[in-house]
Length: 329
Image (cartoon, rainbow, N blue to C red):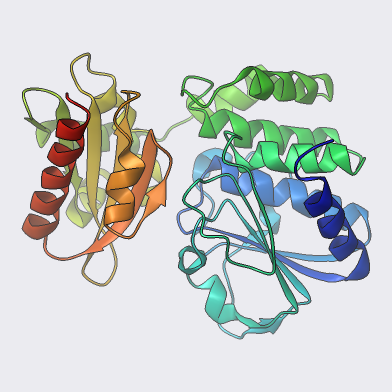
């Protein structure tokens, strides 16, 4: 019997009782967010429910191949009422962004996630930090409740898990995760097609953005830390979009001596967006992100930090140094 059996039943009861649903996720949605939203959307629609899917930011181009991705909209200016709102892959309520202001009312908020930093907001929570992706949390919910999983749902769930495991390279890639993905493949997922569209279909602007990144790369702490900036001008100069920087940090982390890689990006309202990665088991970058009001995982986390470029960079580098020192690295 799953440790989440009671929660599964509560979610099932909520789904069957109500009719009008909203499915939201975090700002700057990634593959796990979008894949999970669509998979749940397919399920609810198959049960005759009225389903709306919103994200503050638009779907990145590489995920536009996902079935019925056109269901994912940006929140309207006029608030709308719902019976149940699902928040997927969203560790902190404020990270829903503009979705919050677009919800006029709701009866229940259901929080389904896999981030250890999730603070448990909502009326009903299903949080499994042992899962590498929210897509896997949903898959196990669907299986436990014996919901039918179509090929389209399987494709969305596979994309969710693949992207949040770094194409099965991160430490969160477990035997349980691989068994789930094998079952999704049995349901009809075309692995080669999904991988080609996610990992081998980038616009030229992304490559030009990487060139700019490499030009301003800084190496510190004896070669253990690599950091870089992305400015608004860099997007203008290259024709890249903010969504195109996803995964570029892995080029820095892949350098043999680097333990921590960090990206600083000019964001909204005087804030700096931090994205940070670790490849050492003793270096938990979630500690760093949470220090600045963010969160995530031990090997991948992020935050939005108020301050000037110089202030934020200096503060983050100091905290990275503290964490490295604590780990004896």
